[in-house]
Image (cartoon, rainbow, N blue to C red; front, side):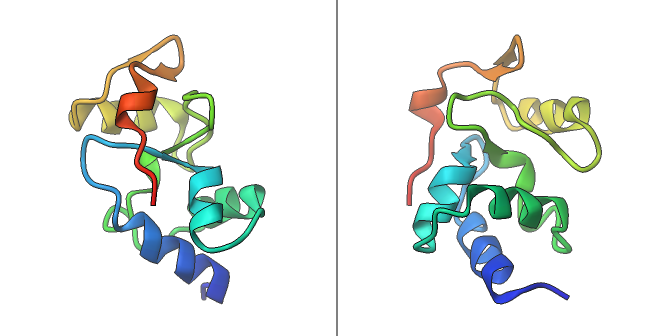
Amino acid sequence: MSTLFQEKIYSKLRMVPKGRVTTYKELAKAVGSKAYRAVGQAMNKNPYSPKVPCHRVVCSDGSIGGFATGVRKKILMLRKEGIKVKDGKVVVFESLLFKF
């Protein structure tokens, strides 16, 4: 069972389109919080994947961050959406960043 905070995060994350990424920080800000780590925990417990695309959430510097089924899987999912990843970071991160 998800918490109210997690449900708010999942609702916002549904807005991020294919081919774009957002950050833990942007998601937290979008729900009026500074609990960036709690966003990461919500991603790890995401019961709605892939409808809630937690693979599109990356770190504020464009690095990939973690993923419940492994970073390699996250990179593969991003690449399937046309997002290039090099040396563990999203290429042209700033232009792909989705802000709420």
